[in-house]
Every structure is written in C-alpha cells, then in structure tokens.
Length: 424
View 1 (cartoon, rainbow, N blue to C red):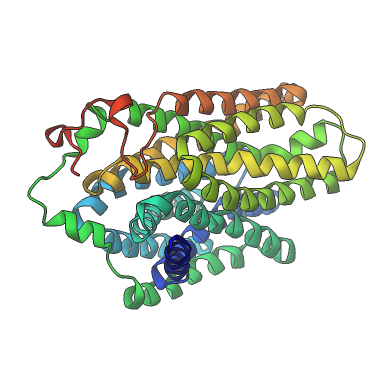
View 2: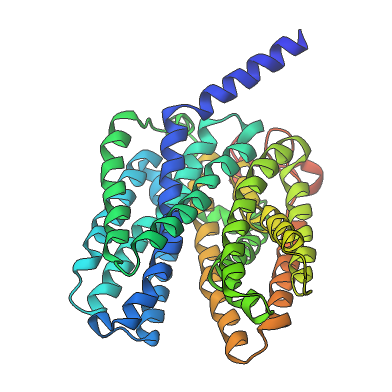
C-alpha cells in the first residue's frame, strides 16, 4: 500500500514538473540566466570599437546600473505579486524586460543605453522571484525545494546558451540582445494562454486574515528574514563574482587562457548537477541542513582552488564539484523562503531576499576587481570567496529548522500566532 501511494505521489509530481506552469516558469528563469552573461559578452566589443563612445568606465556604469535595476525590480515585485497576483506581475515583468532589451542596440548614446538597461533590469529583477513563487505554489510543500532547484537550472542553462551564441556571433553583439528580447516577446502570448494563477494566491486572497509585509521584520519572522537576507547576499555574491572573474583568477593562478575559459563552462555545468542533487536532498533531509552542508563544502572547495593543480582532469573535477556546491547553495536560500512564509507575503519575502542578493551581485565583482588590480587575486581572490561561503553558512545557521509542512518548528521559533503574521 505504501509503495502504491509513493508511486502515485511521484507520478503526480512528475506531471506537475512537466506541466505548462513548470515549463513557463523555467523559461522565465532562463531569460534571467541569459542576461547574466549577455552584457559581459558584448562589453569587450563595445569598448574595442568605441561604440557610442564606450570606455571601460562607461561599460562598468552600464553593467552596474543594470544590476541596480534588477535589485529594485526584485524588491518591488513581491508586494505587487502578493496584491495583484503572480501571473499578472510575471507577464508585465517579461514584457518590460523584452521591450527594452530588444531596443538596446538602437540606443543613440551611452546614457540611453544605460537607461534601457535600467528599465530592462526592473522587469528582469521581478521575473525570477515571481516565477519561483508561482512554481513553489504549484508544487506540494514537501517538494518545494526540488521545485525551486529544478526551476533554477534554467538560470545556468541560459548562461550556457548565451556563452555558446556569443562565441559564434561576436564581434556582432547586436543580435545577442535582439535574441533575448524577441525570445521574451514570443514567450508572452504562450504565457497569457497557458499560465494559470497560483491556487495558493487565489485561496489566500479571500482569507479573512490579511498579513502586512512589515511582518517580515517582526516576530516570529525577524530571525528568518535576517538570515535569508544575509544568505542570499552571500550566495549571489558568489554567483556573480565567480561568473565574472573566474577566468581571470585562473589565468593569474598560472593556467592558460583556453583552460581558464573552459573552467567557467565546467563551473556552470556543475551548478546544474548540484541543483538537481540539492533539491532532492533538501526535501528529504531538510532545507536548512542541506544549505549548511552546501555552503560549508563550497567554502572548503573555493579555498582549494588556490592550490596549483598539474592534472587538467583533476582540475576540471575540482571546478565541477565546486560548481555543484557553490551555486546551488544560493538557490536553497530561495527554497527555504518559499516554505518559511505564508502565501500572503511569500512573494514579498522572496522578492526582498532576491533584491538583497542582487546587492551582493554588485559588490562581488567589484571587490574581486579590486583584488585583481592590486595584483592579489591569487590566492586572495579564492580565499575571499571561501570566506563569503562561510558567511553564508553562518547566516543559514541562525534560521530555524523547518518542520515537514514547511513551517518553523515551535521548539525553535516559539508559538506561532496568526496575529503576528503566520496564517495556518
């Protein structure tokens, strides 16, 4: 009997993972991953050909203003999604990102280019947390960690796709932005026809108890909120810092350029593998426990990258395993958020966690760049990232363990009171 029930549950989960909401949320996150790499792929050509008068400083401004837009979009999307619905906000976000990404090659000045990236970032920033919220609410609470990590494989898939397209098209950078924008525009009518609203949102919208977003900074959620904010900050600092500077760090460590570039691809392949493993494990062993192991292993492996390795096979294996732990640790923070908060504020909580994380995405490449300029990238760049992972571990260590249903345990969190914000 138990075997039959277990089989039925697995079959139901597979159907949900192969459904339209799951596929469309995955494609939405893929757009975010695509954008992670696209500007970085275009910047060398923009500077070399002085397009619109681009210099290294102006390119840095364009990259930074884009991330600022993403952070603002992530923070603002949550309250909107909790009030007006996940579906509406996701459609509007993709439309905003797609229109201004398509228009980007038509910018007539660096200022307009930056403005378009800012506006595209506003849309893009709200895409991922809203898609993750909708996907989490599409799955049973006991499988939300796996749902989150499966969805986030789209992020690194998008990064890999951009890298492969850029290798074929550069120095013709304009098609990279046209491709990303048009892909979003083509996705919109499909989402309009096939994407339903979250059932959890529809149910909670009619509930008599409404929860204010300010509850995130009140008991019993204050400890949770601070922990996931710091964990998200450290996690995205690692993702963006390593994706931006790993080739340079490996080059400074004595490896040739071909090897250094290949290792970036290996790192992202490891990330996809890690997401699949982490999600399944977190649903069985607990999200907090798995996140602690992932951040801790990431810290050790990042420190080990500072050691010169003579065997290319051993180096590839070390970088692959590093990718398995480092990048999926960040997603486990998001998975924790989807279970720790009620539906009324779930999108707000996830949006704010993503927004704080984007601040880490801005800071990570900046600090690593300073180390490179100072000539201290090897080994201190690797040690810096190892310390960041250790800080992520400490942040997740302070959050309460989640019970099977996804709620904070009474023993660790105190009695839960709906007047304090949690609605059963």
